[in-house]
Image 1: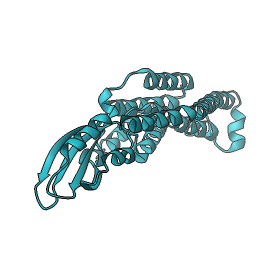
Image 2: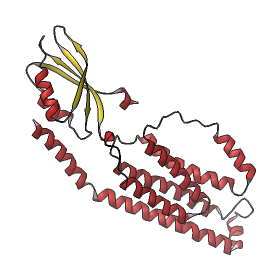
Image 3: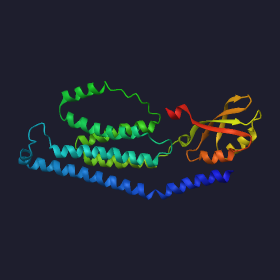
Image 4: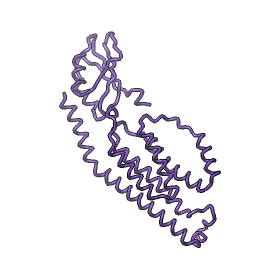
Length: 273
């Protein structure tokens, strides 16, 4: 029994190792693109500063134009790339449940929002108070369970602000440092487990409790009975804690027995939320 569960874990680990080079190359490519965009921002800003006539030729002259539309666009692109790179590293170094797609998109947009906010404020104190008042109206209704995720959101906002203020060196160094922290800092081992409910219905009045307990123990699944039914077909509902790499199909194969009629797995309410 244990060999089947172990083989499932080994297959998952082999597939993870086999796909490692491709994520690594993708991450390096995004980091290189980020460095190129931030470096180009400095070059374009210097060009607009050294050649005032260039702003008139492009039609972006005036006190509101700043370093020019090209430089401002590059800043927003750089902020978006920072969000993409951090989200990419977090996705491949996270040991618990993966981030939802909406959460990943929120991280990228939050970094862009930080850059855009600082670009709008500039050196204007009234703008700063106006944007602060508008931002106070916004309320995040989605709770963030993992403190690491909340910290990443704050750092992404700061990195976006650094880009918006025209500090590409600080933004690039901070991004690499944040990615290194996500990769090196250990996570709580509790994040490596998932909670599920499993309903096992017997084919008669007698429930094969010893067989079920032996299979769960061999697969390293901690279970706790939460509901027991003594009807024509005996049934027990368990709360199970198992590793994300545990194959439910292999567990069901081991649980299959003439005395068992059906096995139904359901994610817990906490995981669904």
